[in-house]
Amino acid sequence: MALVSCCAALASVLPTNVFLPNSSTYASANSNRWSTTSTLSPSCVVLPGTTQDVSSVMQILTQNQCPFAIKSGGHMANPGFNNIDGGVSLDLSQLNAVELSDDLLTTRLGTGAEWQRVYDNTPGVVVPGGLCGGTGVGGVSLGGGMSIFLAELGWTANNIVDYEMVLANGSVVHANGTSHPNLFLALRGGGANFGVLTHVTILNAQLTNLVYAGQVLNGLTDRSAKALLRVLTRYTAANNRDPGAGMQTIFKVGGDGKNEVETLYGHRMGLTALLPVPFLSPAIFDDLLGIYPQTLAIASPAPMSLLSSMAQSAQANGFRDGLATITFENDRATIEAVHQVTWDICKSVADIPNLDCFWSYVPLPDIVTANSLKRGGNVLGLERKRCDRMGT
Ligand SMILES: Cc1cc2nc3c(=O)[nH]c(=O)nc-3n(C[C@H](O)[C@H](O)[C@H](O)COP(=O)(O)OP(=O)(O)OC[C@H]3O[C@@H](n4cnc5c(N)ncnc54)[C@H](O)[C@@H]3O)c2cc1C
Ligand SMILES: *[C@@H]1O[C@H](CO)[C@@H](O)[C@H](O)[C@H]1NC(C)=O
Ligand SMILES: *[C@@H]1O[C@H](CO)[C@@H](O)[C@H](O)[C@H]1NC(C)=O
Ligand SMILES: *[C@@H]1O[C@H](CO)[C@@H](O)[C@H](O)[C@H]1NC(C)=O
Image (cartoon, rainbow, N blue to C red; front, side):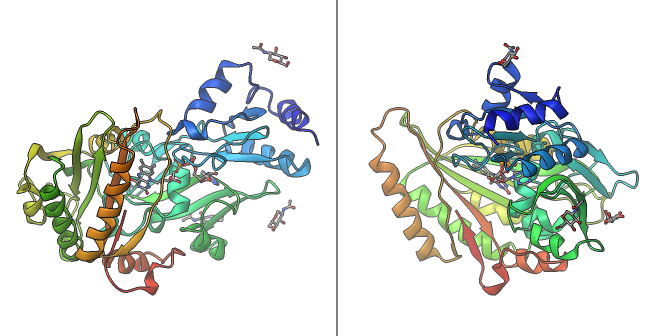
């Protein structure tokens, strides 16, 4: 069927949910993405409001063999991953429910919600979702998911107890411990192509929204970089002994000549939920606080929503972004080599106007795998290698 007819067929069934290029809703939905590289030109944008709407959409798309792309938080920069030229943009941003269960143990989330919205709307708990507030529930839940609680609780996907999914033929299924167990395993890190994920139910990490949150800004010099890499390697090895801690470091080489390193860190409350968060800096961060030049070092108990918005503001929306990522052993010589290559690339493009270079290190201690296995495992394949790792 011609693409225009796909949009017309959708509009005939869901007249108030389909938007053509001449509407302002199309423009705002289409541009509401982290990177402008993923803003393409779909024939129409469909904004389903319910799981049943998604089911109707999938029946029409499948029956008419319409090309389409799925978008949740829209944080993926690669053109064509969450958008499409000339096809249907299935935009889940209206599926953004955040519902705490009566027993406070779980939260049900619409996959179109961004994690910032989740943290902003769960004042009594913390959900183990993406650290960066702008990432979406959909992509993070399917891809694995790195929260500030990664070491202690495993991947975000390992904390999801129910995935609600619309299959290609429009059937709505629940994949969980007792229903569609193979699909349940496949969705934990298996990526995007099993169906349209509409809602997840996730175990809450703790019964207060407070975490111990810190931010350190260092000037970027050869010496501070070397010291930070040393801290990161030691921290990753020590995270097993203090799994409540989480940390990410972002190196920035700006087109404005401003070169700095931002480290965000956090510590979760004890498992005995009513103990207060630590009011003194956890010892695992001591080495980090001793690195100079240091332009800022702040830390205190704070709502999770503050930490996630700080992570988001370090990597703002609205630029053209290109990304690459590698994972390697937690070893000083290796991280120094990775670092040198990356910094050299950034130096080689430093003269290009309006171009910023960022690279970040995300510790991935061995205990993540063990703690993920305790929560049912996943299909990321990381258990095949036993050493501590570092993602960047
Ligand atoms: C600056 C930056 C910071 C990041 N920080 C974190 C972080 O703190 N923690 C973390 O875990 N990850 C982080 N990521 C990675 C991010 O989680 C992934 O890019 C993730 O896929 C984004 O999810 P999304 O829903 O926002 O993306 P989208 O762009 O909407 O979707 C990503 C992919 O998943 C598919 N998809 C999305 N939703 C669905 C659905 N409901 N059903 C089926 N398929 C779907 C899309 O088609 C697309 O291919 C970060 C990435 C960047 C660029
Ligand atoms: C947009 O175009 C469609 C089809 O051509 C038309 O029916 C509709 O009225 C237009 N809407 C606006 C807001 O101009
Ligand atoms: C939809 O697909 C699933 C999985 O293949 C199948 O089990 C189910 O019977 C199908 N439903 C309909 C209504 O065809
Ligand atoms: C698992 O799926 C079944 C079947 O849809 C449902 O009845 C049950 O409530 C689900 N379990 C959880 C934990 O959501």
